[in-house]
Image (cartoon, rainbow, N blue to C red; front, side, top):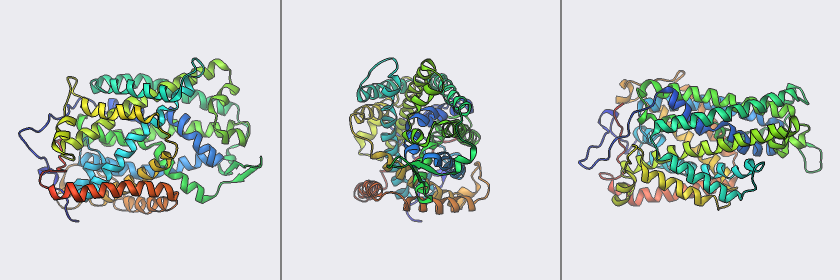
Length: 462
């Protein structure tokens, strides 16, 4: 592999004007609260999953279960690499160090695409769930959520852990209520989870094909994607060599359960396949209970979306901060983005993420769901490749959490992810490929010729 970074122990770039390091202030509990909040189970359940119900019907739970199993292998890769390379740069720091700077740069671009698009997409669902108490404009409400999340993101990370923790309790309660109601009003047996039926255009039902399930896995991977936030927070975790892996694996298990159990309950409790495919979960909850319960669940979901916005802004600002610290941009831009505020948070990077996110709420983002799924799959693919290289040279002797079944686990993951990518819509692949091509040009024309002064990925001491 050419143009790789130096070994971990010599990778830190010291400079007289190097920016202040992020403060280590959270443990496993705080990190797990923040990370699960980024997965945002309730908002994922009520905003993203209905789209899966629309295309996969009764096969939605099976698709999410398969995606969760695949994410175990992804989580193993993240856990090993996150403890080996504990940096706020997350995926790009890990991949740059192990697979080369160009691969790391492409991972950064894919992750930046995901983190810039997902918060406003999720925020767009807020108005729908505030409808029981107010008639609000979806775009204006979403923009308000993004600005509120940006203000919260300027605070100390420990304070945000408590804020998001309270919101997280409410969204878990909402998901539990949905699960209990769905199971209590079951219209069909567990065998329906494998029947793979979806409402047809002629009023009947159609069969969900295996190819369609594979295609849906890109979104299913995105459903629990937030567990990677633990890696972004590794630079602010106490004892990251131990706590990063614990946080990643705990978050995946908890979030998968919070999402999958209600999905099973909804599948069993929907009055018919047409209602399930319609994906109007608020109407289902109200039909199973009463208006008061439906309103309570809707408000909890609205809070969950705000919670997700806060954590995503926190995560995304750390990525942008780390890229500036690692000299990814022209020097004036690097200097501004790497500034830390009075609470120890990268305040300029936070504003740079949150304000454009508010603006994106006024753009039609529907087609970007597919692009986001392709980007997440591509990002996981490059992380899996880096995991294959994590035990060579000096990295072999570096203290880190080590995954079981290496190298079989990352090899299997690579094969599956390549197949999933091959089944995605051509338009989504072309959009993502075009963005990747532009990023490669920036690398070739600006970063690579300045390799001694640009894209110097630093690895803070654990």
